[in-house]
Image (cartoon, rainbow, N blue to C red; front, side, top):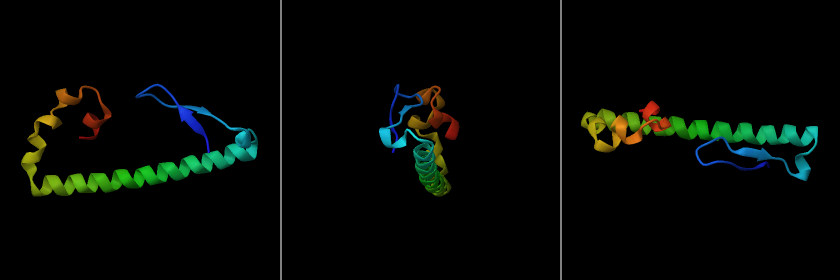
Length: 81
């Protein structure tokens, strides 16, 4: 599996281990990344459904101070909201 570290908030850098320094290793690593993407997409879908149900049951919750756009200023969370 690729190890990664990068600047906080940015795209992590990718470094391949010896096992992945071949075309076959890179293809395996891509498969692992695709699996992580599918998992994260599933989680995002579940969370969006939870948020939808919460807002449906309490529309006033959208007025909460921590949801004010200036509280997030430029974060991806503001875009999702």
